[in-house]
Length: 337
Image 1 (cartoon, one colour):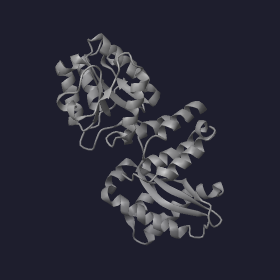
Image 2 (image 1 turned 90 degrees about the vertical axis):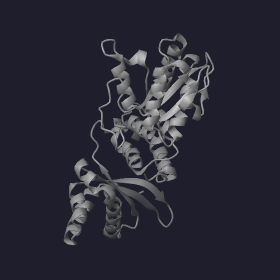
Image 3 (image 1 turned 180 degrees about the vertical axis):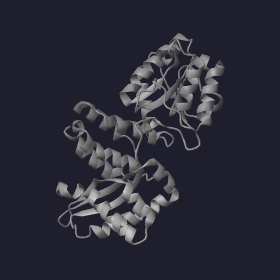
Image 4 (image 1 turned 60 degrees about the vertical axis):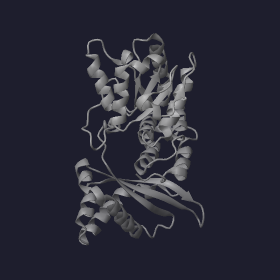
């Protein structure tokens, strides 16, 4: 493997490229390089012909500058990658194969699931920070549905999924309808406990309609009744009365991890939870969940690899750094969106 010195020269590299870009009249490229915080992330290794280590150069820029780049970002990344290849051509054991320009994340950016067409709303306090946010639609005044929703909420926490269950999460002093509306505006997906009483509930119908209207994934859980109306087009999971909530939680997680509407947010939540891991055991368990995500985008790949250097509970957890590098090599660049 290459000595650490190469990776530690990221800032030196981009400051040199900044001057070259300015001298060649590439003003926008020079501005990006001048304002960027750079890091080199190891993303692969080829032991053929004395060995070559592959790196991705990540450039974090202020949010305002990032927003100004728009459709020019891809061209800038390619141009900077080309200049980096020229600059480091004498490094026979290193190759910078990719450049990723990303915004400097605000502290709560990981919790913002709003699309570009929706105004940003800070996540309410009942959502656990950094977790995937799942709204559980159910008939709250029915005892069986309440028990199932409560049990499901507890089981989902093992997968870093924060479940909103109205009778658990609404404070008595707050208007319940306003809290439900806030949860619906800030959720990442919805699951519906379809009990016989669910079919006649106007509130539950509206909750499902809001989720569909916002383009969020809806997962029906058949709990004594078949999905109807808008829910009828979704394949439902069957919950056996008295069955283990852990089984239902696992099946819900698997859908969230694989579905195009929820996969990216689920990956974001797991990577954030991995980054903040406080024990070796938690690092190993969270990594096992990350490995079940079928694809990651470039920003997620960069953040995942960075966790090794940022958190000793990951770096020193037996096998975890190797599993991260193996995952990046296997699926890291499949999804480039």
